[in-house]
Image (cartoon, rainbow, N blue to C red; front, side):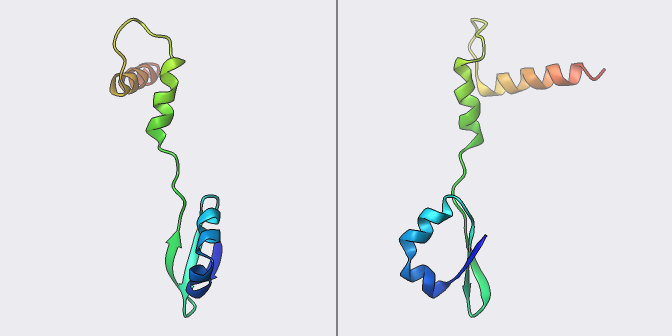
Length: 80
């Protein structure tokens, strides 16, 4: 995590916006942390949706809820 002053942040806003994509930034004022700048992380649901072309289709309509339910059922049936 990078720690910078509020004055430095105002002066170099563009630079720190680019850096925030890769690393968290703590902005301080009078030596105390006031704001934490964090980059946006990719949405996990989009990752699941990207698998729909890979998962074999059974001919039935497939949606995320049905897919999750099927995986949970298979997982917990094997524990018995």
